[in-house]
Image (cartoon, rainbow, N blue to C red; front, side, top):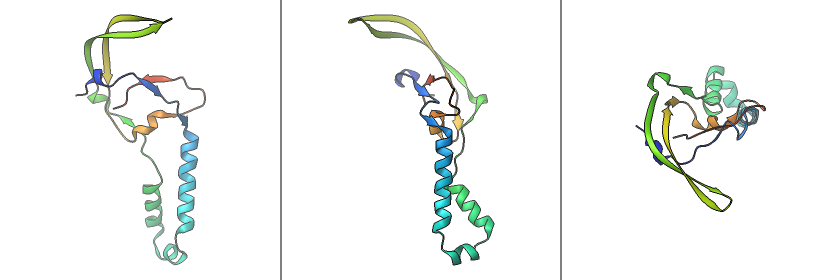
Length: 125
């Protein structure tokens, strides 16, 4: 179980950089890796072995949500403090957290899948 109260303020997701930057980077790295393989080694190694090594080193695993393991954490009584023109306002509220475990690379939750997406805020743990 995750302590959602200890995670802090939610941060922006799907807004850091475009996914095309990430994929272009992986393609450049793979191309550079092929260029650095000695010719004799490349000719004497089965194509499948070369490809599997390149895929393993120069690819990523997108996150896959484990929906069947999702759960609601809470309710938690919380107090939100916010500054308003030099004075502090305190609001009491209730926090419910939807916790969804996943497999794959967490960093992809910060990549923008397209240029016209909206920013979602969440905690990634």
